[in-house]
Image 1: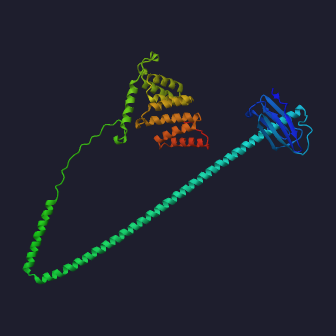
Image 2: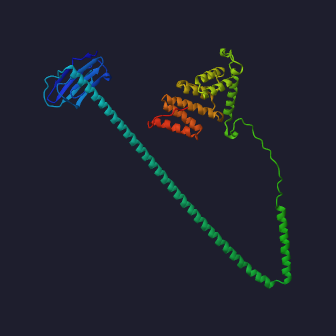
Image 3: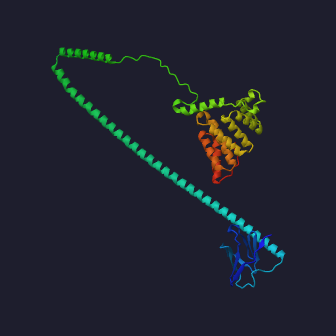
Length: 420
């Protein structure tokens, strides 16, 4: 039962009623107030102050202030008059009815307030979206304008270059024509003089000299030509490579480290476990246990698959595929924290990052990201999905899931897909 507060004080004038309720050293955060036109309730457990007002008040214009160890109420009267007393005497049934009406009214106000708040938030989001779209549109227009200006500038430069080339070509043609015209004019006069001053014998001797000179020049040109190249065959050998990438595109130290870790993982088998006493020789092989777990996973027997992976991990803790596949089982069993731990362990073993383990790293990132999202840790999940998308940018399903998580973080759509 609450303790009724009776040591309150009140004063009034023609239009206002002032009520002061001591809070008994209770924190202000624990004070709850319900006020209607004819009812006032102040609850601060374990204390309670309740009054059924003598006359109606204007709830909208009334105020309440909490501080300095007291709750002070300023209640505006609906009619300007003096009250005989603060509260009115009514029966319990009427009191119960007024309490219920007050609670319903407060609930209606809370619902209306939440709707107004939701409407305001929606309008703010809409305004923010419209502003963003407007900014993006202006940015696109600015970029398009810049492109058009650059295109017009390039076109003008190209036209100017073509005009310059055409002018230069015309000048060269005119110069060649002038040279040819001058050459014909110079040759025409000596020929007439020669024909006039030379005899037939001199002409025959001159032709003979020209023939001899041409033969000598042709022989010199023949001697100046280089000898043809001799044919041959060049042998080309390629450096043997374990990875499919070219040597110039690879990271040799990281790849060698990865191969060394894989070799150590195949050798690191613990055969001193008590669980191995009842197993056959091939059942003690981590690879056989991994294949067994994969088959159990495919049939939907996730608990048995986890047991197979557990024993394989006890035999060899350096095989990342065991942790990654066990993470997939934990996802199916809703053991989300264990799925995150196993995916993280797999990623730690899948170092350094090379092309040979890209597919395994992608699966580990997706599984850990899915577990984060199912735990509603969407920011961490988005980081894993983005890393996976960097490794496989052409994966349409992975890109769609990444966009869905990003929209969920922004609060636009609910997540409805169970990732795996």
